Length: 155
Image 1 (spheres, one colour):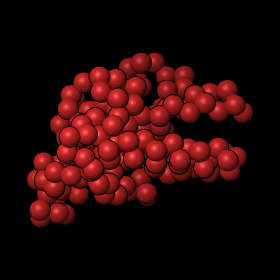
Image 2: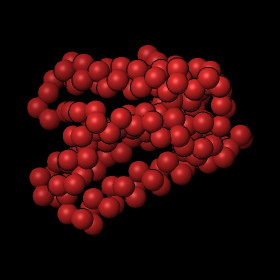
Image 3: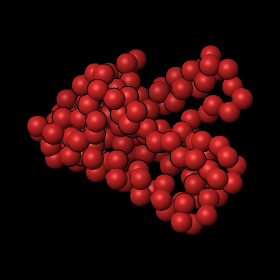
C-alpha cells in the first residue's frame, strides 16, 4: 500500500476539509440509498463514516491493509476509504466508497471530494472496473477543483 496520511500518526492530527459535490449523481444515489434505510440503520451508516474519518484524521487506519483505506494508484494524492454495509431487507452488501485528496500543502489537510455506492450487482468485473474508474476521475476532478480554488494549496 502506498503512503497516506490516514495511516501515519506521526504528523497527526489532520483536518477534514469538506469539498463534496452533493449535487453529483453518485452522491445523490448514496444519499437516496441511505435515506431509504430504517432510521437507525441510516444513522449507523453516517456514524461509521464519521468514525473512520476520525481514525484517518488521527493517522490510525490500519497500515498494510486495503480493507479500509487505499491510495488510488492512477491519481497520486487521492485516497479511497471503504465501507461494506449489509442490508438485511435485500440480503445485499453495499460497498460505499469515499475519496479524499491529500495535498502537499496544506500538509495537514484531508480534502473530502467524492462519495458513492460502488456498482457491482449483476456486473462483470470489466464493467465494475469501468464504473470505478469513472468515480476515480470524478474524485480527481473535484480534488483539482479544490486545489485551483485555494491559492495556498499545492498538489
